[in-house]
Amino acid sequence: MTFDKVKNRLGFGCMRLKMTDDNRVDYDEFSRMIDAFMGAGFNYFDTAHGYIDGQSETAIRDCLVARYDREDFVLADKLSCWYFEREEDILPLLEHQLSQCGVDYFDFYLFHSVTRNYYEKFKSCNAFEIIKGQKERGKIRHIAMSFHDTAEVLDQILTEQPFIEAVQLQFNYLDYDDPGVQSKACYDVAVKHGKQVMVMEPVRGGYLANLPAQAAQVFDRLDGDSSYASYALRYAAGFPAVRMVLSGMGDMDMMRDNIRTFTEFAPLGPEELAATDRAREIIRQVRQLPCTGCGYCTEVCQKNIPIPELFSVYNQVLSAKISRREAKELLPGEKGLAADCIQCGACEKVCPQSIDIKKNVERISKW
Image (cartoon, rainbow, N blue to C red; front, top):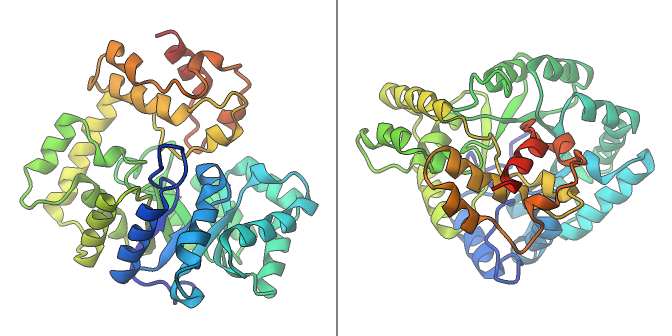
C-alpha cells in the first residue's frame, strides 16, 4: 500500500516556515512544530530542493532527522525540472537532496510541478526510467507526481506512466471548478486511473484563511468556532480518493489549528458546503491574482524580486483592504524592486498558476 506508513491525513508542508530576523529558518519554532505534529499522531513531511532558498531540506535534516528515528516519519522530496538540464544531472541532484536532508532514502519522490512542457523535458532526459531505477535500488520507496495542467494532459501522463502511484493536485473549494486549474476534472482523472490523491494548496497559499470581509461573514454565520482555514482543509479532505492534505504551516498557531481540525476531523456538512459555494462566488467577484506564494518565480528571478510578496500586497489593494498609498509602505524594499524587472519571462515559465507576472509587476512598479 502506497500510504501504509502515513499516519492520518494531514501533511506538514515545509515551504513557509517561520524565519529569523537574519532570514534563516527559525529552528526553535520549527522543532516545536515538529514535536507537536509528531506528538499528535501525524508523521508526513513534504519538502523540495528550492524551498526557502534551499533551507527547507537542511532544516529538516537538523530539526527532524537528527532528532527522530528514520522509521518514525515519512519524508517526501521532489525532482524539479529547473534544477537539471541533462540526463546526467538527475542522479547527482537526487544524491545531493538525500545528503541535504540527511537520509538514505525518500519515502515519496515526486516529479515536481508537472505541466505539458515539463513532461516533455522529463521524458527527453529519461527521468522516469532513472527514478524507477532508484526505487529498485531502495533510494525511493514510492514515486508520485505534483501536477499543474489540464485534465487531458494528466490523463495522457497516467496512461503513459502507469507506475506513478499517487498524484498531488492543487485542490480547494475556490479552484474546484475553475476552468484554468481544473481541480475537479484532474481529481476525476486520478480516480479513473486508480491513483490516490495528495492535496496541495488546500488553503490557496493562505488566501482562504484570510478572506475578503463578505466571504468571511458567510462562515461567521455558521455555528461553532472553526477557523476559515479549517473549512478549506475539511473541504479538501472530504473527497474519497484524497489520502493526504498538505498544509504549509508557518508557526505554532497554524499548527495547533490544523492539528485540531484533523484530530477532530469530520467532512463538511450540507450547510458548510453551501457556505463554501457562496464564499467562492464572493471571492471571484474580487478578481485577485491567483498567487499562492509558492516562490518558484523567485528561484529563477535574475533580479531577486520578491514577486509573491509584491502580489500579496497587490491583492490587498484589489480587494479594497488597503489603499494604494498604504500599499507603497508595505512593499518590500530590502530585495529587488518591481522597477528592477527586466521582463525576461523566466518567472512565467515556472509559475504553476500561469499568472501574467511581467504585466502585473510592471503595474506595481508604476505605483
